Image 1: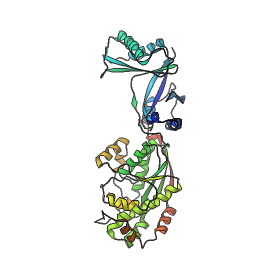
Image 2: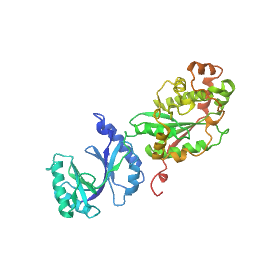
Image 3: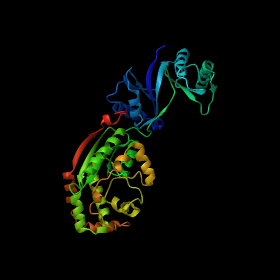
Image 4: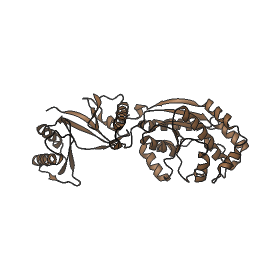
Length: 397
């Protein structure tokens, strides 16, 4: 009997795609190959609506499982024993799984993925279930069994396994176009970026800082946060934009109550210019309706008015606890809550406007050289290519 270890990847939303399904599958295969960089295995190939990773004798399965669990586009994946699609070979494979013990009840979950195999899925369940019961005397239990034996027939191969490992779901990286995220060092914007990544967007980032009037901590934090987010994307670009000069001009010429709204309007203008430069089609923010003064419906309208491209706000209907739950899940929370001085902590008014009007903001900006300030920020911005540091990614590293 020929036996080898294999990882089978089952697709998530890709299964709903039509004529362009192959394009999504190719993106997922490229992403899987990228995320397994530096790990030993034979190859990744596509077979009958699945991806197969052929393992070598020294493949680090735990590290591979950890990495694959963060790949968007995967519903679940399994580490399987691969044998010939013949009943004798399948039963021999089951003997090996049975020998691992630890169950008093079981069920069979067999799937025939090819019409060439003589038995259908139900017949497979019956015959293989009878085989296991004869060998073990264990009870058959369809609900909450101690063990489930999975058998998957694909072309001329059978794959046997005991557990399914949940994937990250969503759509493969790069299938949803490019977007630029306004990334602070806080809790919300990293979660917003994650939500768009899960929809297939390739996300770039811009961070506004007020150094040297504030410390460099916020810049260090966003780089740490990016190392977490890049587990879902591997590569990105980060634009660091000095913003203190814009803030000084706003403080000098605009009413104090409108400062935060005007800060945001300039950030959006600058971000759009960077997005256009990078051929991104949308901006992403971590706005949650009513969470802070700048995120009232009126202020969001005033801020959005300076932008001609879509602004995605994936957290707009989420409350803080929901956002924190996702931040904990993806691993950004502990970094985000570290104290720092972000640019919006500089020159903050005591009583910010919560119900601004676009005309009101335009009048406040009348004395400002908008074009010159935006151009100056773009000219002083720095661009960093960021790649995932795999040494911070794998378990036990």
